[in-house]
Image (cartoon, rainbow, N blue to C red; front, side, top):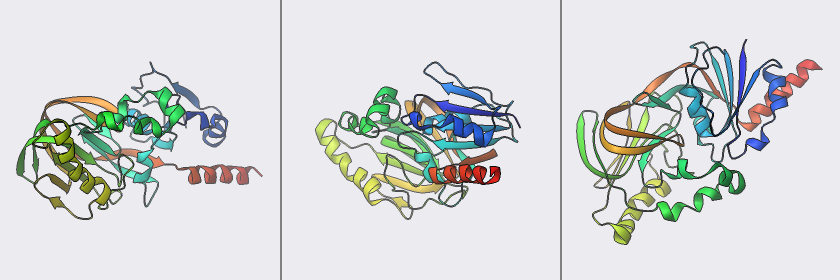
Length: 290
C-alpha cells in the first residue's frame, strides 16, 4: 500500500511530530512531504494511505487535493487550536464534509467578525505564542463587518447586512463549545447568521457584543430565530454574497456572487487520530513486534 506522510512545518506544534514513529507505524518506505511556505498540494491520487500531520488548515489542504476514492486518510492534529479533532465525538471516522462551491471544509466556513484571525496570524507567532498569538489580535478584529448577503433556509429567503456568516459541522469554533446541537456524521451542517448592528464604530461594537455573547457563551441546543441571530440545522444553503473573504478551516478563500453551502459525503476513509489513539497505535505495533 503506497503511503505518504505529510508534515506541515508551519503548524503551531509541528516540532512535536515524531516522523520516525510515523514510519514505524505506517511503513518505512512511506514518502515524506514537508509543507513549507511555497508548498502546494494538488494531486495525491497515487497514494492509498495518506497521513496528514498539522493543523486544521493542513487537513483542509489535503481534503481539497485529488484523492483516490479508496484512499485511507489519517489526520493527526499538530496545530494550535485543532478544532477538527473535536468533530470525532463518537468515532474516529468522519463520513461527511462541508462544501462551499467547489471547496471542501472539515469543520467551518465563516466570514465576518473575528474570522480573519484564522489566516492572518503568522506561522512564527503560532509556533512561539500558541493560542496567545490569536488572542493578541482579538481587539483589532473586534469591529463591525457589513456583509451584504442573500440566502435561503428551507426555501425561506433572507436578505440583509450581516456581521457574521458561518456554516459549521462541529461542536466548537474560536475555542467556544457553542454548538450543542452537533452530532457526528448526522448529515447536517448548522448555519449561523448575525445581523450587522445599526451603528458603526464604538457604538456598533457595543451593539454587537450582545448577540456575540448569546452565541458563543450561551450557545444553542435548539434552532434559534430572532431579530439579530439565526442558528439552525441545514443540508444546503443557497447563498448570494458580495465579494467577501471566508475562513475555511483556517484557510482564506474569496467568494463572490451565487454559491451553495452543503453537506457532502466523504468519498474516502477519513479518521481523526488524537494523541491517545496515536499512543495506542504505537503500543499495538510494539506488542506485535515483541
